[in-house]
Structure formats: structure tokens, C-alpha cells
Image (cartoon, rainbow, N blue to C red; front, top):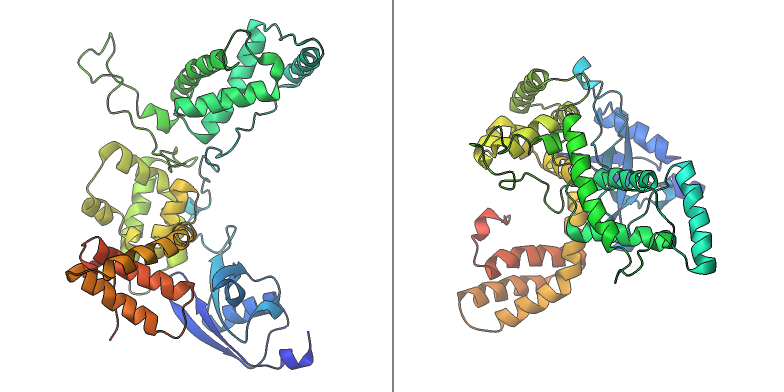
Length: 407
């Protein structure tokens, strides 16, 4: 670091989960770690975190701060809580927070066939060599087919408990592509039989997981049977995740019971009522009580107003983002703005076309676009603001509930 740059004063806007504060520095810190320590001391933050900054080279998009020299003299930095921050837990019940049962979504590309048991891999290796040499398929024993299907079902269940027929076909196709010796002679696709076998195997695997107490599939048990003919049909009201839901109905954390989690829920309610909220503690408790919350939503389907009364922390912006991540394993702001940016050019074109016509909607859009064109800077932020302002107008929605302006 040059002596000139190190002596430059800096002005930072430090963005936390629910507020932003200004921080003036007489000189540039020697390292990122030193900057973090300064922020902790001057802003009274006692938890571990990393920093991201709005990178001017990429239209203000967030970039992890790895080198202190990358930070502009006047910058906006965002605090990102570390996952292993040990200072978050203020009660013993929070010390054992289970991570979500699923950490991955169903693959968007080719399904990755898992590695099978050592003896199975040996047989497949010999079978693939024979197939390549003589175009001869492997003769499957009952045990060998069982081992292959069991491993595939376990892998698929790791993504979702109820894969669609298309997704099962994707797994079957990937299996014969990786191990051509498993192709079915006479089959048009070469994997139709494997697809059917996997569909049955997934049903058996769900039964196995249901007996083990897995909440996601237990929710669909207790339907009509020979012994309970009065109950609803086994094919009606099936509770299964929507397309984006990765963690649909996770089990309770180890050692926790509904009564323990209900006590935590009540603690959250009281904490949210405070003027000075302990947001890290709320986040930790919301993480712990996630299975209880999902059980309420999936099994009882309460109205939104009732749900927010039970879980008022969901009114906090940071907790909306966190809940979205818990359910989908995706970052809500990043996902939203990435899709918004992708559609910005087309939306601006649509709005200008509409504004060129006559009518109240056209006049309102014309006024919004006029204000946009008057601005000196037309970067991604101004375009986002204009599009978000114009969209409810274009859709004939009440703008007051969506977009607020300061005068």
C-alpha cells in the first residue's frame, strides 16, 4: 500500500440488516481485518462478520471485500453475518441448530449419477468394458439392481421427496449414459425400464423414510385404507413442495420438542416488541424454530394475518430474506435483482410504447419516464427504480402500497 493512499480520509456508509450508519475514518485501514475491527469498535458490533461493498466497476453490485485497496475513498459497505458466529446464542436451546435437511436443488442440467458401493462399481466397470468391446449389455442380478436403485433413490431423495416423472426420467437417462452396459435391449430410449423401476423405488423409499419419522412424507400418511375407509383418498390433498421449495417440511432439531420450540416462538414475539431489538438473537431463534413454522404452514395453512401474529419477526425485512433462503436455499435480493435486470430493457420498451398512447395509464407512465429521462445518471439503479415505479401503474395496481416517494 502506498503512503499516499493510506493517508487518505474515508467516508463509509455501513449497511446492517435493518439500518445504515455513516463512519468517517481519518485514514485508510491497513487491511480488511483492521477495517472490520474499527467497525466493531466504533459502531458497537460484537459479532463476527465479513464485508461486501458496492463495486462501481459493476454498477454498484455487491462484491466481497478481499483487498482494502479495492474499496473507494467514499463507499458503501454491507455487513454479512458469519455462519459460525458464536456470540449469537444467548440461550442453551440455540446451541444446537440443525442445518436444513437439503442444501441443493434438483440439478438444472445433467443428473449426476452417484458413486455406488465398491463391488457394484467393479461390476459396472467390467460391464462397461464388455459393452464397449462386444456391444453386450450386463446381465443384472436381483441384488445388483436393488443396490443400484437404492443408491439412486437415496440421491434423488436428497434433492426432493416427490420428483416428477420428467426428473425421474432424467436420472434414468443419466444412469445408462454413464454406464452403457445397463441399457435395455429393445427399448426405444434404452432406459424406460429403469424409469419405471425408479418410480416404484421412490415410493418404497418414501415409505421407508415415513417409518423412520421423516416429517416431509409423514404429512401424507394416515389416508384412506382398508382399516380406515372413512378417511380421505390417499391421492387427494398431497402435501409436497412447490418447484422452488428445497426445505419443505424439515424435522425438528435434535433434542427439541414442539413445546420447547413453542417457548422459543413466544420469546421471539416478546423480542420483536422491544424498541432495541436483538436482531442476531432473533435470527438465531427463527433458524431454530423453522421446522415448527413450516409444520404450522403446511399442516394448518393459516391465513397470512394469523401467521404474522404468530411469527411477527417475518415483518422484518432481513427475516423475509432469511426465510426465503431457508426454504429455497437462494438469496432473495440477488435472485430478484438478477431477474429484474434481465428484463429491464424489454420492460422499458413496453412502458415507452404504452406511454406514447392516450389514457390515464399512458399519462402516468409518460410522467414516470419523463422524470427518468431528466436524471443526469442512467445506471442500473435508476432503471430499476423507474421500472419498479412503472410496473404497478402498467398493471393497474394501487401504486401507494408498492412505491413510496419522498418530497
